[in-house]
Each structure stands twice: as C-alpha cells, then as structure tokens.
Length: 175
Image (cartoon, rainbow, N blue to C red; front, side):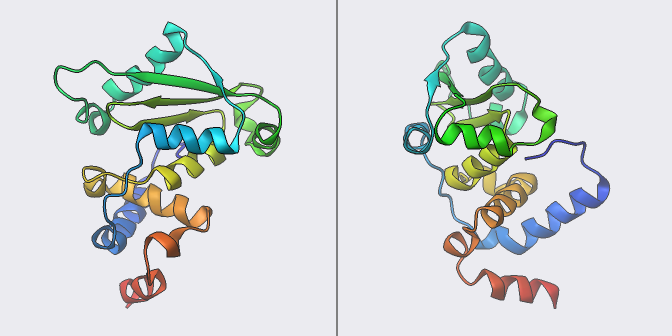
C-alpha cells in the first residue's frame, strides 16, 4: 500500500516490474461479491451505510482516472462499506498495523459496478485484498497497478501461484 509520495527511483522500479511481469499476467479480477465473501470468511464485518462513508468510496473512484474510466455509462455506482471490529481475527489486524493509522477504525469500501476496493486503516489488509482481488484487463496496462499487485502477491506468498515459473522470469529480466 502506497503511503508516501512516489520518487523517480520508485517510479522507475514500478516500470521495471511492469516490464518483467505484464506479459505473464492475465485478467483475473474478482467481483465485489467474491471480495465480500472472502472478507466475511476471514474477518468480522459490520456494515456502514452512512452517506458520508459511501461518498468516500464514490469520491475515490471519481477522482482517480483509472477507476473513473471503469464507471459504466448510465448506471449508478453501488458502493458498500464495512468496518472491521477489534474482535476475533479483526483484533490481529489492529495489533499488527502501522502506527501511522493511530486509533482509526479499519474500513473497507467496495463498489459493485467497477469492482473497486479500498482499505483505510490497515496496509496489510489493503495488500491482502489487492492480492486476492486481482487485476482486470485495463489494470494490466497500468504500470503502478501491476507493480503493486506483484508486490502484494510476493508479500502474501502467492506470486508463484499466479505467475508460474516466476523465478525464471526474474532471472531473464536480470540478464
């Protein structure tokens, strides 16, 4: 999860990762319902249906071009928001998160029409959901999204499952 402004060196790294992996990836984006089912299986969830919470999700989509381009013409966005309480497996997310989040609740925002997913309050959960949710065809042409996906797959120990023979690819890119 990106929490600082990107540097030219970081952008160059993302572009290098993109060049290495982009041709090996296929569209594998999960639906919003699949992401919700995954979350519900792993963590306690409390629905948050306030206008303000839902507006955060739609605002993130509309103010970010790669996500806004996925909005279907003539169809209203259908956001949903969940809070992960500090209980059960959710408690571990709170215990292990970065200090920068302070005491804020962990929130997950999703949108049905675009399959958008966002997390506030936990970098680890954000990375886990990026790895689970996958990329769609449009995402595969965005060097940041590809590089972030690869980093999340590596962090979650899933890279070899998604990109077979990935060690071979990494060696070839270093030659």
